[in-house]
Image (tube, rainbow, N blue to C red; front, side):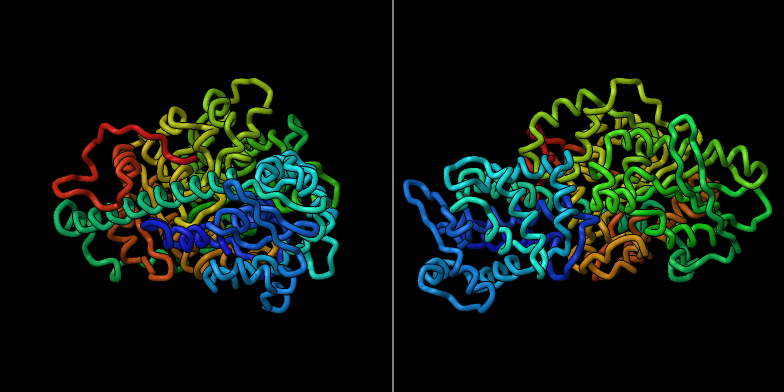
Length: 599
């Protein structure tokens, strides 16, 4: 059961619910660990939140019993009865007492959560849990899941997870409970309730921000059609070139191996070259953490068919191979902090090498970059945002209280050697960042330094790089006049990724609705964006409109686009706590309230 859906059920019985179902990082299929930090964190969070916050607590289990303080009282439940229910669906006396205070649907979802396996080896889980990122996750959840004596559960959780991974059926929460190395588990109900409240606030504020973006996109589309630009969007989009379809340009593909001796770093690059006869504009695509260059091969082929040269490097310290090495004990961490520097340097070195080897074929003074997740960070860095150590020191001091999983990666930048890193590249003239991270590593001051045209793409159900703190709020910090915020309603962190033979197949709830829909959106919008801003064809700008995204939009994953959104709009919604404005108010009217949006 997803944390967000759990909160929706809980809040419905106590007060007005502002949350709608968000992404479900579910456990319906066995899977590994390419996205293990997010999956493990949510598994542990599900355990702690399921067992603590009910008025009469839900059942859970330790080595033999789970203990749940509630005010002056303490409730407990034996593991045997929880196991019988999980395996047979039968309620024995003590569990039946608790179950009478819980909705049947919640009980069934608890049963699924307890039994759903994660297919990961003991070596792989141990390597991850002994990495800096794994230890940060354990520290957080050790505050909730404690020993019977009330000590933080850091070491006990780690031991239980490693042992549970050796079970033939795979790592399940029920197996973790069996292997917890003390007589009982004590759930810190106070800390759990704090997290429930924080999750509730984040869910509410995110939903209101998403509603604001969608409403503004509708208003913008009406204005484009009827008032502001009626001549620019005629004829109708159905009569124009369908940018979701392959273009007519022939192209070839080759794989290069680049060796940067100054950094002792070697990496492959897939290069797509169109047969245009002139200088082809270049787009560089940067993949996300634990991914590889094949996840955006669909987009590279599509852009090449419209006359773009496309270069897709694979970043060796943060790709699928790095996580595979971690699982085999050949690497000590998910990704080293140095990768925050090496990734943009990979792209700069790539551009230098292409300048030497492909003169007369590529226009390397009009370069575009597109990146997803960690690749989105890479794109923002190249576009002009610098690492903001002051912001990092401030935000990362309270890292354990944040619900933003992406901060676990962003805060690794504190470990970098002090230096004035020169990571921006003047050859870059436009950027698209899909599910990027950057709220803390850049902050408002550095996001505001980006002056090239920029498109930020958010998924409303992204639980890894949450839409509100990582894309929607940073969009309001931009000062470049050519800016676009694209929202994939019901989209997750992985919706825009293509298939890759090196990646583990993700279950449907993690990907979200049909990924072909998201991929078609990215095809059309990236062609329009790069045609406009690096190929010098302004006639494509008509596609960069709210009205065009309405034309593209499909019900399974509705699409919105805005090019204007102010901090005051988000502040007003968060301060009032309501998504609807009072009579006579305008969402664009600044309000005096000042709050801090959730990170």
